[in-house]
Image (cartoon, rainbow, N blue to C red):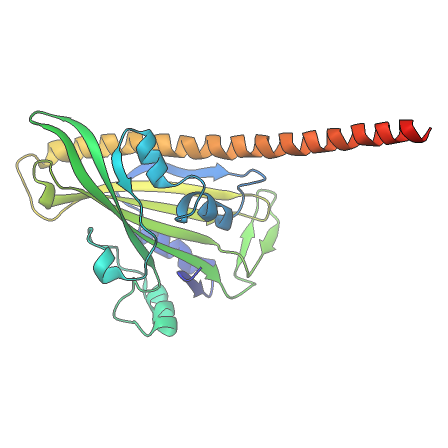
Length: 275
């Protein structure tokens, strides 16, 4: 992945995660570990990549949003990112970025960006729908030091793999353009996926926060309703991730079972012919 930052140890990644942890937790450390979903790379290929099997745009469509457009990821921040302020990275991360991109002045370099457009049906007096854009920023992390790129699994065993990602952070900032005071705030989300020990799967944490650029009389009302609605939406999304992981695992198991059964039947039939 071109948006991967190589760091010396996993502690640096943990410090970066704390900076991106927003005010309101949606889910924390949800454990995901099935045959088809136990690495960071598998999660990315299934949910984050533009060509993923289960994209965020698909979930928005299933929830009733219309005219959903999901563009490819781009490294062009200037023309792509129009959302809120991305949290500033730790000095260690900024140093790692400058070493590979010569962009010490911009700690968001080596990330990928996209803006997903949608039309949401709303229940607001005088307003039936609103257009919106979910701006997203995504960066992966990998340790270069195999000794520090280790994890303790639930059995207390230490494992390491310098070729695997230890996690990623995806920061989203959603702006709706037709609601009252739309230019005064954005609803920001942080997705943090971490690799656990070998064969122990991954963990997913999501936090949200309403970020205000200008104050208004309805700030507390908008803040409360936005957090409540976004929390329900993301909890449904996480539940969908759990179900997909289980369904795909069952599908693969059934395919293998059917294949083995057919092989046995063919073997019995061949043996009968020979005899």
